[in-house]
Length: 304
Ligand code: NAP
Image (cartoon, rainbow, N blue to C red; front, top):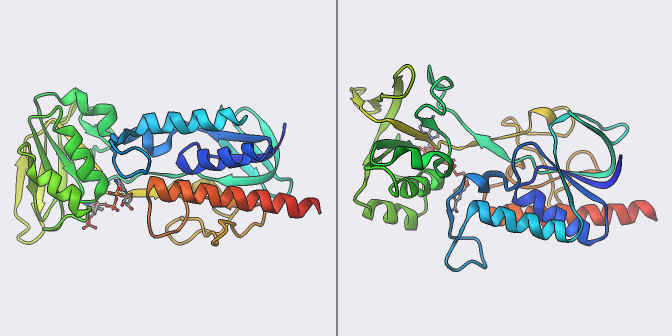
């Protein structure tokens, strides 16, 4: 199958690129592995995306972007990428082979783990990386959030809708999150910050029953009885498949210039998979727009 533009990833960057490319009458295919919306699917209240003065739920914002892209003819297909053949401009998935003129990488990022023993076994059994998905299972229970960034604080606030107590375990004595969020969280009676602590052990066999936390200053350890642990310690780019195809930095982030063009002239990149200072839905949307306009210009030049 031949397409003008293939976009890998259906988060805000990919869907914005799709809106622009399909509206420019280019045949545009978005390949998505899981669900359209990217990390927005796992985000509760989005309060700082312009145009929604009362805020909007992440999944809803994702479906609105999907609807808008489809309105202009974007095709969305759920397939897993197996290989990108740069010589033939071919994208091979678990189900199809496509030839394209331009490729836009918008693969996003996935949550980082703590790397503790039993973390994988207990995922879905008390350990979670998504409050939107799992928060309701912890009604009336004591849970903890790890991390001090925007995600940790926003999701801790969301968890107070269900849990009895939400501990926020942070490795320093100051959150990284925006001041507005910090203040909102600290005003909430259900939220109890635990400063200068790291999680060193997970307890429980079938389900999580508690954790050991260590004070980073005194090294003293204590056990915290909780049934849910929500881990929000940052994200890593989903670029494993792209190494050797386009240039990436030491952490796997794609190197793309201000036109969002990568080291390969017909491959563009947008969103959280790109090396850049700020990772927001709004910046992902901006990136998707830039990558799309650059792609359209590249195709026009190629036709001359
Ligand atoms: P982040 O800003 O990188 O914060 C990660 C947090 O986890 C930091 O507080 C960090 O501690 C802590 N941490 C990292 N590794 C750890 C470990 N091994 N053990 C314990 N704690 C650890 O990640 P994020 O909150 O997911 O945000 C990612 C990006 O998305 C950011 O650019 C953020 O601004 C953006 N975002 C924006 C919004 C919004 O605007 N509403 C919402 C969500 C995310 P230290 O602080 O000590 O480094």
